Length: 191
Image (cartoon, rainbow, N blue to C red; front, side, top):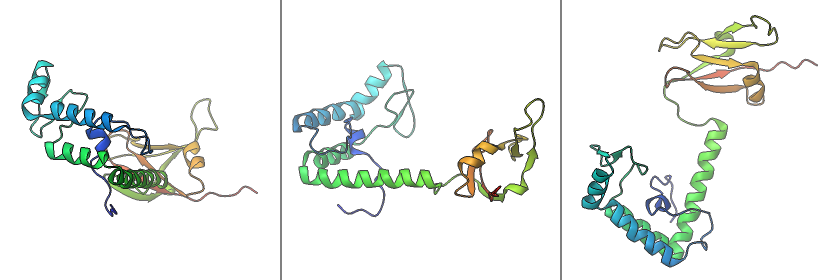
């Protein structure tokens, strides 16, 4: 089951089973029971009736607004999940791929290699500096207005820069919208 693309649908999530990373933790009977529950929970007729009873509103994409399980799965997705997780060989391959995908996603988060809406790259010197006001003279912050109207939408402190000193860049989101700013900076050694 060599994959070059990340897993987009989590079979454990579909069957409402815990993923521990170990292929020996789930007995076949538990997988089969989860499969039958998922079929009932996501059956087109039964899911709509259960949601209506619970006072949930169906959305155009097949989910129910306000439900704990926001997504409904097709019978094909449920069956594929069951076939994969109930076969020890397929499940071991799937678990390895799922773990690898999660490690890669965590690494992208850690390195900042994540897609951000409206990401703009600037130097720290392009931001306005506020060198402490009032009684806190040690407090230094940098800010830049955002097109959403927030005058200090992009705001960072000296502590933020210290945390990312070894990378020389920091990605921050606007406080008022979904835009992002990558700020490049250099750290001067005092010694």
